[in-house]
Image 1 (cartoon, one colour):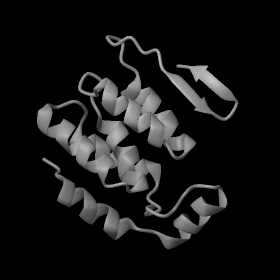
Image 2: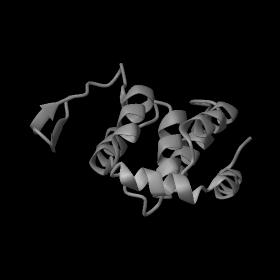
Image 3: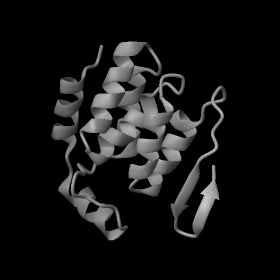
Image 4: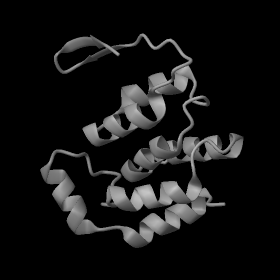
Length: 130
């Protein structure tokens, strides 16, 4: 089983200052970024799996709490939609920093068929219903 320490070690090894520089040119907040490519994050997500129980949900919460750009993306890749609470969803949506995370989170983790999602976003272009 992959744990939080293993993941931190993997991303530390893969940290890429040139990619971080490129990310900044696209307007990504790189304060807590490692410049890890999405395909690499997907490979880690594949090793972890998705929705394998309470321990994995705790890992999702640890990854999100790290505030590291790529680990937040990873958390959305492995998150089980049935374990994400409405409060967690609200927090994550408030903190979405970049479109790549928003898109991935919406597709892989925040869409819950068994939960009525009627949220209001206030952002660019005014309020929009999800």
